[in-house]
Image 1 (cartoon, rainbow, N blue to C red):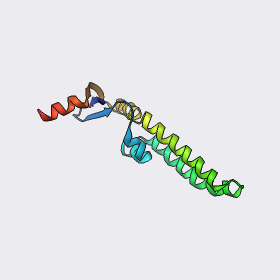
Image 2 (image 1 turned 90 degrees about the vertical axis):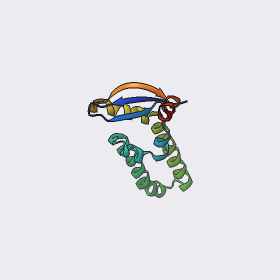
Image 3 (image 1 turned 180 degrees about the vertical axis):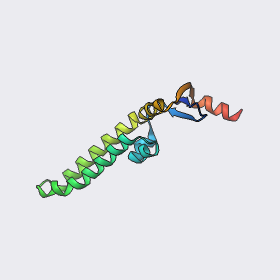
Image 4 (image 1 turned 90 degrees about the horizontal axis):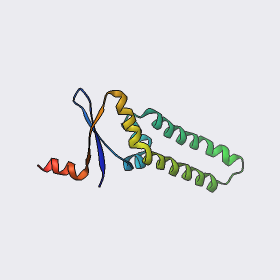
Length: 118
């Protein structure tokens, strides 16, 4: 069962933010952050990707085996996606509050399905 925080804006917009782990953030990373207008995490994700891309030839030129470079990139990517999954929803919540959104309730996915079906 998932829990969601419901945020409301004075202009009538409503946002539901899942508490805890964010699978979309894990699989989409920087693109997910862009879709939520989370500029710092998106920028960090793309900066890490670009640095990895440009440092690989340099490291290979220094005599480091390609397999070692590839493994390092995979470990860094795994850590980055782990951070996105763990903190993504929290980052989004932190972004909504200064924009005027206020938490109005907390619901479970079971409560939401009852509301839809009634």
